[in-house]
Length: 146
Image (cartoon, rainbow, N blue to C red; front, side):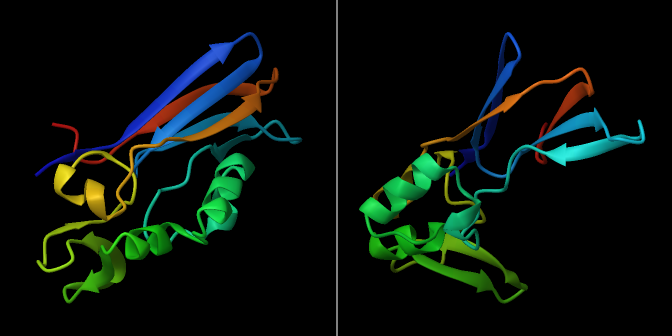
């Protein structure tokens, strides 16, 4: 079993389009009103504990349409289980209905096909941001890079 996260950035003129799955991050380095460099988080980790108000409005509407108020609710409605492992009780994970595996700490990923029937999806969160002259760079970061 393996799962993969993904960040994709597309710059079209002054529009930055961000596609995101999993728990990798995109962070914008920009200048504030005092000309100090500051970080702006462009993505949120798509984890079971994520409430729906953190999602893009388009995806929030889809969740409501399918009666899912949060990422964990979708997993549970598909007969998957969501709970923290005894060694990390505060980190909610996605588990198979009858086995204590795989314990995936995200609700959207490529791979882990054993969880696809139990609510794990590979639909990205999409957002847009207009780039200004104050924006300098974007950092794409992930754990687990080998």
